[in-house]
Length: 461
Image (cartoon, rainbow, N blue to C red; front, side, top):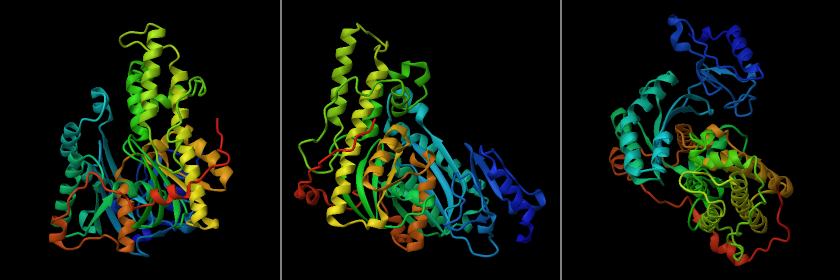
């Protein structure tokens, strides 16, 4: 049957991928050969192969612009392993089907961003209600786009920790019932673990490696030893960088600027900062007295609020009006947050060197999480890596924010390792959500005990 995947068809796929600008393409067989669809969809300029496989060392990657048909084989030559992933930890309802080679067969995502922008922030009961309203359609859509049935899925992976309790409960209960009804194994997923491992879908990276996870709810420096073993080198003691950016943007009233009205807080600050002076206003350096890798963003947020109040009085700004030096304020605030991230990461690199936790031939830093979409932060960390001999690896921006793809891939990593896979029906029923859950063993005290002093901080612009 799979003989229909002829060389001429692969040449057509090659032609699509070979264009400099990724074309929105969808090649399907006629109704007679509907089950042999090569491409399921192309969404947001990302072409997703279906029923076509590639090796880890292939030139083809998620979102890549080239294709090497010699690395491809059809599903007739091997049995695919498939995992369905479901994500509802915060305000996005996501689902995806991923195979054991990292190919995304199909995905669906319902974002609540516009709703929560109207409320000035995420309202947990509202997020929960929207998850409940959309989860079935999102899961069914991802399966339909993947071209496979639930019976063909090997396991169901669902985010169960950490996150907003009400949101987590929707996905967890739905996923458990789905797995039980279909008699499929269930794989509980740690949300931050999924963020950290997403890069292994698109890059050749072996364990161990250093990870900086930055999002609206977390700021973590962790060492990934394996799929199921992690060490915490540093974490935030209060706010997360994404939260500091979003709340700062809210106080700056950036939604009242037309060009920023539909952007998240972090996106709006990054956008305006491009035309601002990052040294226009001084912000305090968090945790400068402590020789560890701990993060703290509450002080920066408080300093911003004081600066805004001062500038509003100085320029006599009232109501919904915007302070005149808004771009300079955004640039200075973004610089302060970035400097804190870079410095704590630099100390983590020194700690790893002292303890010999990373082999010299595998000095890699993975940047992931929603805040990893910020190009200014990426470029600053790239400068740090160039100076310290590390290689910076980041998932595509589409995979940095919450989505079902990362959950499905984390599930696939655990499925292949047979780690944390639950087969027993009663054990599946007993799974509960965890609003807070450390990703691994905390090494903060060990870092602190070394009293690491940095001789020269890496500078960036």
